[in-house]
Length: 537
Image 1 (cartoon, rainbow, N blue to C red):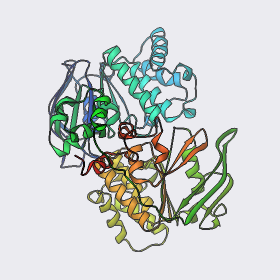
Image 2 (cartoon, helix red, strand yellow):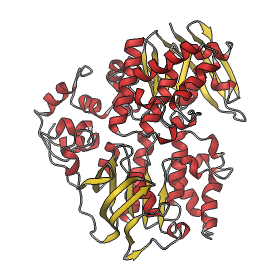
Image 3 (cartoon, rainbow, N blue to C red):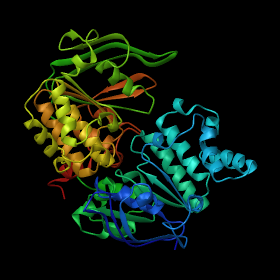
Image 4 (tube, rainbow, N blue to C red):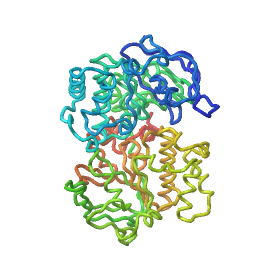
């Protein structure tokens, strides 16, 4: 038994509520484990306890024992702990400290006082194992998000630990980069027989490949077992954490966990599915972007991009990391210099200051920590209203309730989970009721329940005539909420249109669409599938 967790209870400092409540778990040698659960369910707290960071770094009170390879994680020194377990955080920039890739990997090994030959060998072998030797002497600030994540994993691997924990490793990555991270994790687990524990909200990519699934709720273990055992459960809360295609298999009456997609598709092919159609939105133009060109010194980031967004229209901007998507949004809000024309309601906006644009253009960046300046959640939103001399504070409670963070109104934003911070940042973008809302990865680190609430909030705003342009790697969310889609590669928008844009995509579509598109168009989500199946079961 590699990891043995016995009767763990934990309280964060100054809290009377258990963050971990009577946790008992056992993971065998070489197991690949997925930990799921809603935002704030203490998934990250659990893995931090396994590493010893809780309570050694975060403080608080803990009782019980966590044994790794027979060693009590709370009683061993840091060097020995590092040889047992390593962790890669949700945001790799939080743990990348050095300027060069090879220095980043060497840094931790030098702290273990390894000899020079071993350090050089570990650097090159971990880079080769992760397929990134070409990054050896690259400046870390020049790397993409996916490359930084690979460097963080290579650094963790270089310690050759018994277990590696990955906390939301693909939450900010495009589908191609996310698949590469999955393949590295599988390779670490299968070839090196190192335990891999993955904490994820988007379970679909990982589910087929893991040996065990743990679902948490309110600091407790809701379920622990194999994916096959979870498939057989009829608990609606557990069904929510099944991948969409597995929900489809369960809906179709399959009695055993499907071995592959072909088993599911074979049953779908024998069903009648009706077409899913969307209501046509208003065609009154709100935003017009023409011939947009953006350079970062000698690098051409956006190449002659043009598009329109109509009032009340939700547009999803999809594409790989580094394609130029965030650059487009930053240009519209006024954070970057550009060539070309950006027109909002018939008026060019390039002469206006960022604060003036913010009165009618809401913007949510990728990093929710950008929005944390006050001591409480309530004061964050009040601060925004005060900046614009708005004295009606009743909207604060309304937005906090809509995003299910009202219970956190008096809490310090720095103490929130990643998903809770994301919802606070979204609340800050919504508080001024903008005409145009720009969202960069709004569902990052957010569970299915809150994602559904955010979808309804965005649709409510669109029905009020507010135009929304969102960047997301969550194709299922995009296909559920968006009216229009733009796909961007290498600084260019290569396709614009309705959901038919996604029908012939290889990566930028959903697993359910891949199963159903030969049978019927327009089916991208589990809800779409259920609706298409109605009356034909």
